[in-house]
Length: 154
Image 1 (spheres, helix red, strand yellow):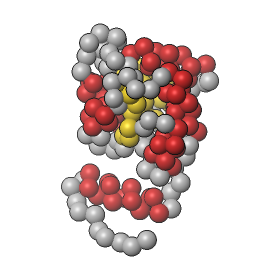
Image 2 (spheres, rainbow, N blue to C red):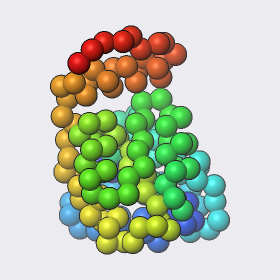
Image 3 (cartoon, rainbow, N blue to C red):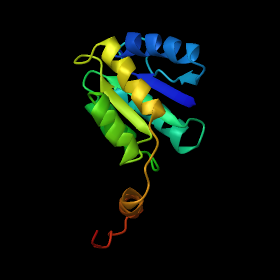
Image 4 (cartoon, one colour):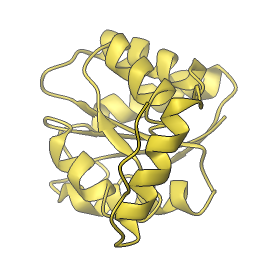
């Protein structure tokens, strides 16, 4: 899988170790680290990774900052990005299978390296389920294009 990684200074070491692991597993990894370990602003990396995913250069983006929240907010400003803050394997699985999240955001401060690696394992293995979830993604796309989604029942 083609994966774009990014972090601010809080997640730099985590991303570096994660990149090594993913490369050993055979993934095509690009690290788009805005600050390379130096103090930096999270929107810089979120923009780079978001653009890589939206343009098709990467199938999945992984962003890490202090909480994951700032990265998620910034990445979701890139058209075509569906970024989700995840904090365990279940939220990663649901973000990918139900929401087709193409960017996963995590906390460097609240999660350890081991759980982050487990979360990424789940994210790389989980496919979008489609079905009723596809209809909901179509509504999200309408919102993204400035339109009002229509009401429909299950």
